[in-house]
Length: 205
Length: 145
Image (tube, rainbow over all chains, first blue to last red; front, top):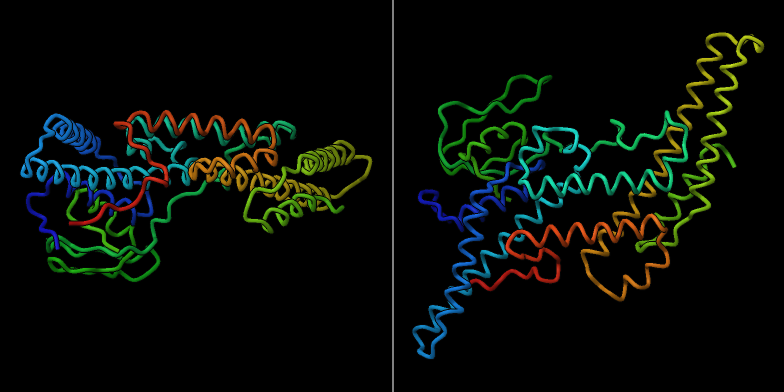
């Protein structure tokens, strides 16, 4: 089990990937983390390239660097792919909501804009342009797919919080849980949404 | 053909097959014609309501049912088109040149354009983050020591 103190960038990346995989909505992008990781990959690959030597010790070190680089690259790819998949899925929802777009990296925002245009054109050109104007919209409210914030997630609490977590929805009686440190709970994503952003709650499978 | 049934029939066609079937251009145009016909019909009813001496209820009912029919047909065709463009996306992600060739003949002009533009979009996205290729073929988890 990982310790939560002193997270290395690689551990933080792994955490970001796991959270992104199990969260129903797209999470804020940690651009600083990604830039740091990319830099690290570059540095390590440069090191391996520049320090080729015949001695066994040096080869061993290079191999270890290579292995770690591969692991980091795998995690980064998986993280970015999980995000890209959500951009595909929720393109209308995201494109109509500036707060949501703020969660995307600038690269992802560019992708969203182009992708939205692309999909809209695929509706408009062969079909909608040939309909009466009243029916020619490609982004009507009923078409917009939004993330299900009531979906259940499994999460682990890094620490015992000062206050319990309210988990009931509006029309139910007030219910709350107060998990202890390292306790694993399954609950509605909406209940821990804000906590997740602040970084004190972790999601697991 | 009942109003809007063509659209549903098109949906049935694509639900039968996993891979992309030939684009039904005639089908899409038929639905467009059907929608226009219903729309003109409703317009005519509204224009001539005085002569026809329709009650408010009759008029409202007429308009509502026809609008609902149009909305349903429109929705069906949008699902049809979206399902296909999602299949096109999958083809691009899996990067299997053989499949791509075989399927090109089943795509409409608009869909071919979609594929080209989507491919360009993905390629330029990948070009940025340190040249990391996100496509499926390279995603094996590395061995843990």
